[in-house]
Length: 395
Image (tube, rainbow, N blue to C red; front, side, top):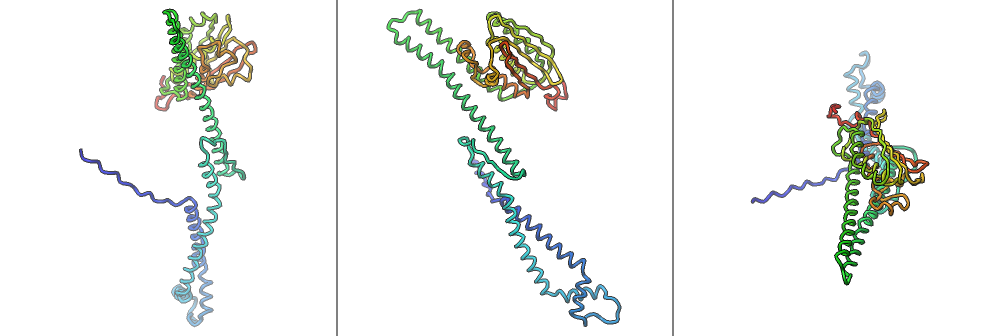
């Protein structure tokens, strides 16, 4: 097989900096203005030059021949200017160019200095010191606005990194817990001097339960990752149809826990990823069933309004402090000791709901009810706002 030719390396020419380009631009403007001023002086005031030349050399102007003609003027001007005057003008233009370049360099440096400060500070900011800020002060010009925009960006990055670290730490802890428990069960079974079939069977059943917990946790983590990625194939859908399907699959669990499900499902068309929207509805219904009280109920409604398609879930339950509602939508966060009582949950359900809502540009509101439980409402944008431009509005 013939050898492939080596790629030709393109030389990397050093481009002039912004300050150099601005200085050259300012110098060109100053020189052009100076040359234009000299040209205007020579073009618009020839009479003045002719009179000065005539006073300097009166014998060159014929007497008694009437007014000075154009030919006479040209000759007088040529004699007056001469090569010495041309050389002097060239020297003046050269000095003007040097002075203009120096002034342009100083002005460009004055304007570029804040940008250099921004670049230097931004380079120093990394994942380890995202707490730093540019903190540009002064007039509200474009550089100050750029600094404020970058400070806001750094603040969001810092919050994102901190949330990511917190999430990874919690996920590692949740994944490590069943592994440690399974290892402890196996060690007890191995060190048992007289194992029986019943003890081994019990150990295997507990290991299967721990494996199921790990599988549910991994599935929830994957669902959360898919939710944060956003809808891949958005298409028109109806929240009422999806909610009706979810409720049919959750009726048995609700009866087992003694929870009554009441539904009022009016058409609520919108656009989104059907699988993600179904996951959102499933997590809301599961949350309303799990975090409830025996004999409680959950009301699920869908409706269409001018603001969009609305999904609302109300459930009875324990009293939730108003300050804890926002925390419930963070990963691995549950209320009080419910994490122990509801071992099938990992505090990811409402985090998934928030991620899917954000991915669909939906408005998520939640507040605690005085008698206990939560009221959660998700408003999806109207269908017309989410249909891609190439679809032509077809449903």
